[in-house]
Image: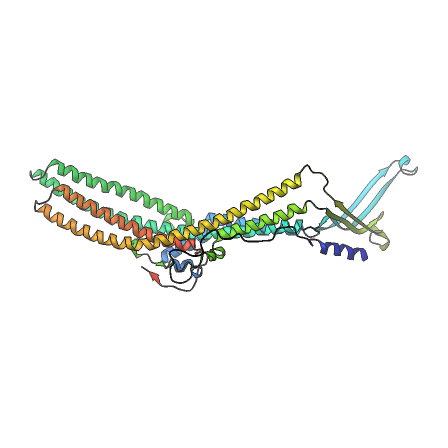
Length: 469
């Protein structure tokens, strides 16, 4: 009993020292506030259903979160990392094995006391083999490293989750914009074809020239080429959504609507840059990997100290099976061992240097993740402030171009303007409408970008906020 108590005491004493460096977050290498703050609800409180209230888009996101293969791989990576952490944790506890053995050996007379015979032996018992007493925290730090790598993998899955929500929303918005551009192009093509027919009639009647006809044909060809490009782009948008959602294109709910009719929830207040440390999964992933590197240093330092291992067993041994479990057949062994590094040609020192260099690499990666996050938010805030003014200016430009196109058309029919002026007015209007459409798309993509950059999209539901049109 005293020996058992001693063994348990040694086990409990394992891990009494930890040689890993203290955890300390590096200072944030970014300003303490944003240059372009926004008012509203904190973005961390928004779910993706709040950011994207469009029912069709919500259905696509929901499907993607359940069917997307990249997200499945991230989830399976978590299962793998969790199992690896479990293995590392198991190394800190003794492995107890039950053993049973029967041996039979025939010996000749000269080796068996002058009489040939068969020797039999029976053994049964429990044993602990080479259990390391973790006095210097080597196993504890290896377990901590595995745990932090697992937590980093969990944050990586969150990053994939958020990125997937963003990609679905961006592709959906791009598809709506391309469909609207296709409608606009077809309307313009029809108008130019009507102009071409009128020009051909004028040339036939001797009122117009061949140059007028060539210019009209060129204008029609431009819209036909743009129409073909948009048809191909729409097909690619649909294929992209199919891959993101894991469903065939024919099974997707893709209602045709204008980009300006798709509502988006406000991104909300970005809060302070320091809040990104708890909100952005890529920063949290880098932080966990930093802590894992620190634990690896502790494990490398422990290799310079003695390693104490314990092998023991207790059971029964007998020459006869019927006498195996008698009290007199009890056996036990207790064999502690100590291993102290004397000369390893600098192996342990090199491993420690590797661990320390890895920690410095992880610190740089952590700081870089913070800087990239700050830049993404700052860029999105800057673009958000500028797009509203661009949209209003372009609306005025489209209105002016439309009125100009009507006036030039009237003057052309009256013979007061050339065909070139008519085609130029059509081209200006078409260009202005396409630019307005692209800016409206960019404005909405920036809202998605800001929402994602602030770490939104992880939760599904959150308190409702007013939507903007």
